[in-house]
Image (cartoon, rainbow, N blue to C red):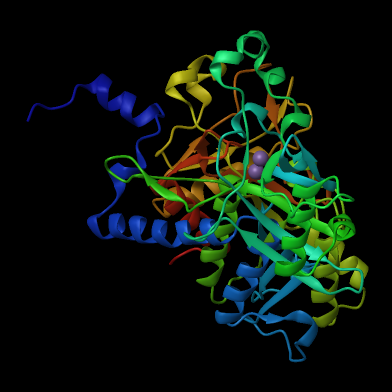
Length: 475
Ligand code: MN
Ligand code: MN
């Protein structure tokens, strides 16, 4: 072996270049990467809406010894496991630390809502022999990606008397699916001339749901609609008016899948941001007695601005902290919450865009995350001069970077797109507004916000390990 030149040695010592995360895996770790991905795919397949994700998270948490806070009477000892369920659409899981909450806490926060097609309040209509459902899309989608793709209907209908009817149709092998149609190329001359954002209009995202008319009768005009209503009555016991008190979401049908000859990637719907929800949940389950209390937060409504009583802008987190401070017997709950927040540290667990080899022109290659290079750290988000970004401090970023380096966790710095090319936000700013130190840390995806997002299994694994050591460093 030839001795490396002095310049090469110096370059390796001084220069920084992220390396493929796959390169640093032992054969045993490689097995763990693939095993975790199996479990992750099952989670993605089972949890396609915020409600489904919330229910699955809390059911798993119960199995891991977490108890609903409102039923917990005992003393908060280090290692005590509690959860807070916020209206079935967001939640917080807590592992009590050895230090009091007023000394600060460590939070990993993700969101469990994803872009999709929501049904309108009066969705059902009949036109030209078909029954259809009108939708209003939720979150940032490219509308042309949603037609001609099998869709499943998920959600909840609350009947006038308060009775609940849960719907999940289109996921089982024998289930029917639904779809939005698109023009055939032969008649799409004008459509193809349009800008991509106008080629498929929001009002054209109508879902086909039926074709058989109700048996002929003189008085009835909309016979296909009536036949569908009749089926809904028989299957779920609801009438047309009940659509107005429903949360019905059309999402891509079918399971998450392996991608690639080497099965190195996971493809599926809703990885923004259920990859962060999943990895932080798995990580928290392994936290025993952290120094600082560990909080795993799952929020809703991130894709529409984190609004409302289940979004990251709500008082939910403060309410959780107030309850904990109260139980720890602080003299002033208000002060205790403020101290906890001012000394609190958070990873905003959210995805970022991976550099796409086919669309490199929108990214700064030197500052983009690559698929398979580990968890992505985004110091800031925002757009046009970092607008709308809380930006992590140098001190907190250094703390996290050191922690990951010490634990051999592959990480990379990544920014969403070139300067002035676009941008995006996460819940980081809302946590930072409360006084916490916050850094965005999550998995990079290809085809983000599409019906089939792609993640690298090694990045999923590194995210899980990263969240875990953030809460409880290994000795
Ligand atoms: Mn997200
Ligand atoms: Mn998103």
